[in-house]
Image: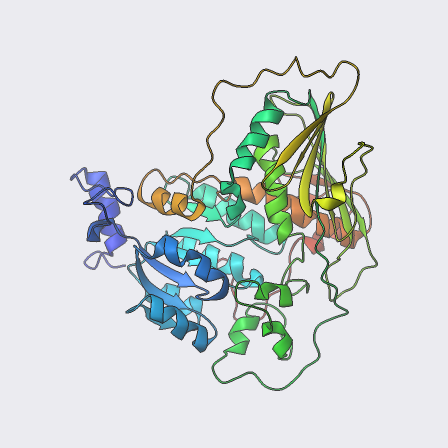
Length: 446
């Protein structure tokens, strides 16, 4: 912007630096409600379906722009956020809305990284539905860009189950030695959505649907109503299993389930990965998959293996009376003195060995508090300390791991990985699987 035409956001930043006494306070501080100066100017990109889960969290902010490739969805969202300007192309939205503070992105998985990158490059706070990206390269670029802007913007990946109290209860138990020294972690999900290949072309897109924008940066596939046949909020299950549009259950429920483990183990990016599964389909991501990741030691634990199972593949555990198959999505922590098995909401400890009487375990006097409301944490962070629980560093490390699982599955061999350079060191050809090609006119780092 020209110096004689500052944006609202520029003014707020300048005022803060100059020390003129302008303070943006958390919601509810001023007169019990947001005052005009306390409200974020938000663009809701992807305005219906999954976005409905955010309506309450942002209803007291200024939702100044709505964007959706389906004009019917735009109209439905506009009934909730009256006066917001409507867009069908998120690029135009981000270029034209000069007074934005923040973006909530609920678009298709294959455009997540694009919207987030464009927003961060414009100095905007970002709430991004999972997965952060659908390739290793996309996830790494988002993390690197966030870290360059850390202290200026607040970001959160939408693994909203993290707000459940069980997450921190599990962390406390493992970290405080309830199962002895941690040796390995196993996570799994049992969802099975099988497809043979991309849907056959059928008909033409309705006039209200900007189908080419829905395809976005991915290779073009002819229209099929199958892509849009799901219920609002879960329509992603109609397309996220295809390589050009998503990552299947690795990036879908894997994001949520692995988060139980990630909250505990304090891991970075793995140094080695191998994966096996069903026969490779060049159009559809695997349903059955086992991916193993090696993580080096840190300050409180030794080196560990982290293993992801999906689609019927399961860890083996000779634990009398425990049937892991009854836990649809879960994590098992293996220690020297027992197991901790957790779903999203509950956990159980199974000691083993004659000496495993748990007298060695000393609970902390005060358990770690749950994080509170997930979306609200991000809203508050935008206005205060910019700190969120699932920022793009924490979530980026986890998502890079999961995306590497798909790379190893496609490479069909164990891979050695350099987390600093983001390169596979024992199979140069496999490095091509870390990224994807985009259609002309679509720029990731825009």
